[in-house]
Length: 386
Ligand code: MG
Image (cartoon, rainbow, N blue to C red; front, side):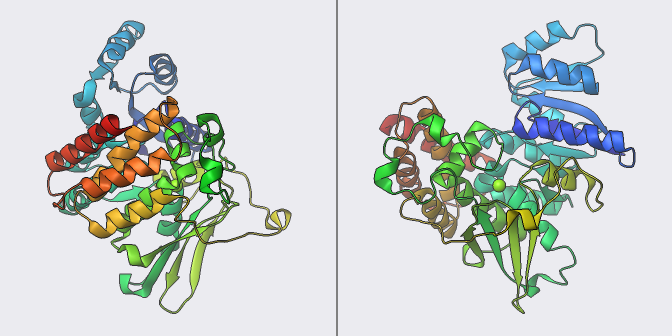
């Protein structure tokens, strides 16, 4: 039986994770019990989840919302864990054996480290923590002999393609697929007046607002290249991004003999979520069956790095290493928030991310404090220059 701590339970990945848990419990072969849930502030939804899944505790990042949850759940035997400390306690919850971190943004870094320190298997959907703190997270995982299982669909695909790989040197490169987002094929001129509503209309995937905007700018793919570099121990030169509009091939591994193994499936996050939870086993899932004949054809293309500069900036940041990716990520989080509030234009996102990355001095990402400081300074820079 899997005993799960779920962080970010009211977000898109969190909701889909609970759906996977329902399905697995119904199936009966792989029961999952929710030990603790954590959310930022959506107390009403969290309360419903608590009443359905009956965890021992619930963490709420927003302290006022935590008080509200306490009032709403007085009839339950439930421990309430407020603030960042609560989130870290939830991540390291004693009775859990796996922590699924689906928190959005850098706020997930400390909880990830907290789960690793407590020896939990980490199912990671929070890519920003690897982008900004990859060296710290991977080193902590190595020291604590903790496995980090990818939940991101591309990384899950690569992870699946690597099953049965005899040794790391047998891998030539990773081929990371990108849908290209809603603005594939557009020119910079055409992107000038793009609105948040247009950017939020992703053609294939059902995701939260932040990652959907990141998909429209291709920042998401830049973050994912960085995430892949850390997860699989490869450099940027060993990871190639391929635009694949249909989002059916979720990524591929090319071996030294030029055999290429890919993982395919309908674009449904519940598949990679379930694989992380049941790994290395497989069970029936709620995802639809793939009908290749009905699809007819699959297409592939080069990414346009000049129109979608965020990807290029992330590749440069990864090449530079140290705190450069943390600066790019922090700047992007702030720029996306400003774009969603209609305070900046779509094309200002890459401009701000690039400027913040370039002004970040070369320095190693050797402590959480250093990473958080680079993140803070990049955000401040964006707020002052937007
Ligand atoms: Mg992805």
